[in-house]
Amino acid sequence: MKQVYSKATAQSGQAMAEFLVSMVMVMSVLLLAIVMLGKFNDMRNRTLMSSRYVAWERTVWTDGDEQKNLAADRSTTEGWSSIYGSAALSVSKADDELKAEVIQRLMAGDATPISSMDRKQTQLAASQPAMWRDYGGDPLLASADDVAVGTSVAADPASAQSGTALAQWSVPTADGAPYLAHLSVPTSTLQSGFVSMSVAQNSAVLKRLWPKDRDLPAFSGLTFSDTNVLLSNTWVPDGAINNERLFSQAVPAANATLVPSSGYLGLQKYAPEITTLEFGRIQRDVVPPSRLSQ
Image (cartoon, rainbow, N blue to C red):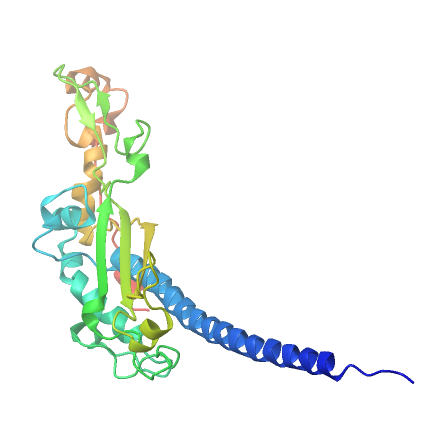
């Protein structure tokens, strides 16, 4: 007769059941963690997009922040525009307005419309992305105060090179004093946009899932931040008069006598038209009326 060991079979079945229960618990925790990582990854990506948005907006909108007072610095676009293109100063955005647009446009639900009044808002968007809630249904981004936006400007590294358009050329003149020809353009054109977002700081669900364990602190939230830098070339003279003022600096003959008249008027009998020479003449382009009427 074959002898059956029922006790060993029962122990083997119990071990299998314990293993399955343990695996279900472990996999449940992993599944919850993966879903939460997906939520955090979406917030991280939106922070990155926000920093790009802020840096780009600063290249097309001047900074009218009175505390920065960039208009007093001629190396900045604002300072340069105050001399050659003051109209650019009228289209400005402060950092607080950029922050409001980021919250309303990039930290809002996908169906949220864009409005020209977004820059005036001070609260979170009426609807946030569907993923931005914890397992208890509470929003991961709780307040507009948890979002920080800032911009700064730095010098273009190429402006330090001696061969750039910023260099000055010494040109000899008739009176012996050299004229320094130059072209005045802004050099601080490296625009930086910074965005920071603190999330899940008061999430009771995540604090229960990640309690304090000996030397490991309890969950207290995460902060995502990103900085984007763009090199801009935003100097555009405002009108014909400012164009003439700007480019005449690079024309020595328009600012100083390079050749004394006695050096060429003696040739008048051979070339009568020599008396009509206009050294350093700078003439504005004029569109013929016939072309304007077409």
